[in-house]
Amino acid sequence: MRRCIADAGPLVAFLSARDHHHDWARSAFASVAPPALTCEAVLAEAWHLLGGTANGQPALLELIAIGTLAVGFELKAELAPVRRLVARYRDRPMSLADACLVRLAELYDEAAVITIDRDFSVYRKHGRRAILLVSPFA
Image (cartoon, helix red, strand yellow):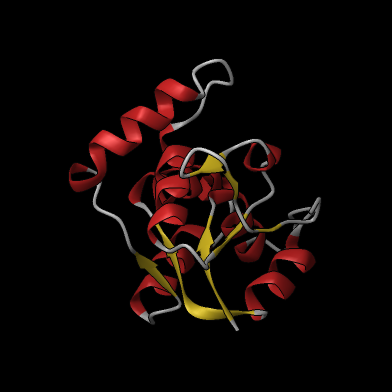
C-alpha cells in the first residue's frame, strides 16, 4: 500500500455521506497505507467545509486521534520552499493548503496526493516532476 497525502476535498467527501465524491473517497482512502499525511491548512479548510454537516467536524478530529490522519508538516520549517511555490504558481493562484501539500509531496517523494482539485495535475514537485495523484480525474 502506498503512503498518501490528503487534501481537504477527499477528507470532506470521506466524512460526508451526502458528498458527490463520498464513495470514491472511501475507496481511495481504503487503498492507501495509514496514516494519511496532511497539513494544518488542509485541516482548517476541511473544518470549514464540514461546518454544515451533523458530525463532520468531530469526525475529522477523531481521524487524527485514532491515527488515521497525521499532520506531517510544520509551516515555519518549510516556509522558504512554500513561498517559492506560491510565487511560482501566482497566476493560478495557489492556496496555502495546496502549497503545503506540494511541499509534502516533495518531502515524501513516493507518496500520492489524494485530491479532487484539478490544479494538482498542473503543480510540479521539485520544479518539473509530476505529483503522483489519487483522484477521480486521474
